[in-house]
Each structure stands twice: as C-alpha cells, then as structure tokens.
Image (cartoon, rainbow, N blue to C red):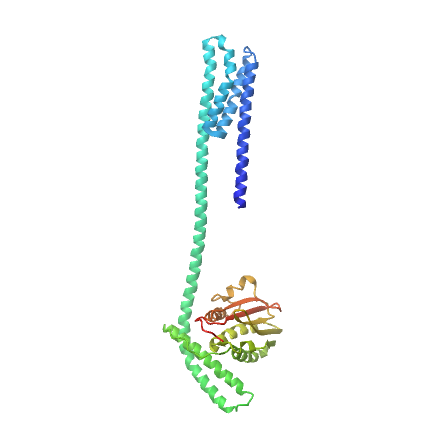
Length: 386
C-alpha cells in the first residue's frame, strides 16, 4: 500500500510541474508579444531578437508536451506575433509576406520538434514496458530455478533413502541370526538368577531389548518385501515404557557424571502405546542427550497432561540446538555428530506422527535442548489410547 501511495504522490507532483511549465511558457509568449507591440517598427534588431526568442517556448513546449503541445504553443506564439505583423502592414506586400512566413515556421517547428519528442516518448514507454516484462521474467525464472534446485535436493534425498533401504534390508538379514543367538544366551542366563536376584532385572531388560530389536528387523524385512502387514502388537502403559527405558539408560550413562531425574509417571499409567515403537523414540532422544552433556550433566524426563493428550519432555544442560537447526535436525541425514547417520530423530518423528502427535525442540531451563513429545488422546486411527 505504501508503494502505491508513493507512486501516486510522484505522479501528482509530475502533473503539477507540467502545469507550472505550461503556464510559464504562455507567460513568456505573452511577454514576447507585448515586447513586439510596444517596440517601434523601425527598431528591426529588437524585433528580430524577439522573433528568434519565440522559438524557445515552442521547442520547450514540444519537448514536454509532444506534437500537440508544440503546435499549441506555436499557435499562441503566432497570435502574439500579430501586433508585430500589424506594424509591417504599411511597409509593402513583399515585406509583410516575409514577416508572415515566420508564422508558418513557428507551426513547422512545433510540429517537427513535437513529433520527434512524441516518438522518443513512445520509445521510452516501449523500453520501459520491455524492462518490466524482463524483470517479471527474471523473477519467475529465479523462482522456477529455486523450485528446480529444491526438486533436485529432494531427488538426492530420495536416492539416498532408496540406497539406505536396500542396505537396511541386507543388514536385517545379517542381524537376524546373531539376535537369535543373543536371545538364547540371555534366556540361559535368566535361568541362572532367581526372581529376587539383583541382576535378574538386567537380563530381563536384555531380553526385552533383543525382542524389540528383532521386531524392528522384522519390520525392515517386511518393508523390503513390500508386505503391508497390519500392526497387531500389544500395547502397554506409557509409564511402564518410560520406566523401562530410564532404567536401561541409567546404566548406559554410568561413564559420565549425569544427574538423571524422572518425574512422577502416574499421569501416563492409563495411556497405552506400542511399547517397542515408543521406546525406540525415547531411546533416540535420551541417548542424544547423554552424548550432548559433558561434565556434571543433567537429564530430566517429565510427564504431564495437556488439553489434547499427554506430553513427555526430555531436557538436558548440554550446548542446546540453535533456532536455525531446530527443524533441520528432523530431516533425514542431518546430524551434528561426526559418526551420526541423521536418521534417529527423523524416524522418531514419523513414529510419533503415526499416533497423530509431534516432536518439537526448544531451549531447556538449564540452557540445553528440550524435546517435547506430544501424544493425543486418540491414535491415528481414531481409537482411544487410554
């Protein structure tokens, strides 16, 4: 709106300026006519000077107002020249006609100069129109080039994902057999520890994680075979999943001085989820937090109810994540770690999205990163989770 107002003011000033110029030219023509009238006819030098000065307002009028303006000023100059012609009526027909020829020259000068100025004005408008079209074409080309670059980037990501899918299928086949051996060994160890033995809990965690990993491998294999098997795994309280993952990661972080806090989980007791999937999300985020903190690290897991469902916040006192990178970190192959694949957070967001939720990142109270997992009361199929 400001742009239009600016140009409107500019056009108004231009119109006023033209009016002032036109009025000034008329005044000059009138003054020259009066000079002709009051100067005696025998003073030929002065009359010749006035006659030549008359060409200036004609030329200026033609340049500013085109052929119509040039002819109009020339006609007014001819009218102002009449007093001069009257003075020469008694000097003979030849002299009188010679002075009368000046009127034709005035009109010819106005027409010729006005025609040239009008042609130049039309060319200027034409070039201006061409310049505007070129500018619009450049903007459109710039936009289309940006879209093309974006499409090429997306194609590159798709090719990486395709290659990664093939690699994942190959690795899944190789991992499946060792998993069976690990599971069998863990079951043997479980028999060695009675129910109340302090180490039995860790063997149970080992079996659960092997089972979860085996399920993930099965999903990869099913995907590589293009099977669309419906999800039929059992659900469990979200609180149990969070407690199980927290116990596992407390042991993982023993090499660092990490103050790991888990808030009250009762809000998630009646909130049922697929444990294998959600534990994968929690593991990805908390392991990233463990890697990020240094020295006396702090990791806090908090569960609270929201208007639409439940929120699980995982915060740390690490270096944090810049505002510019808070969306990029969820893109495939984007990682701040030298040996990171950049897939953990991307997969985690997709898992939460399958529940109709989302994962966001912000700054924590301790200055680090705070990942918030938002889960709705209903899953993606519209069935009540709790």
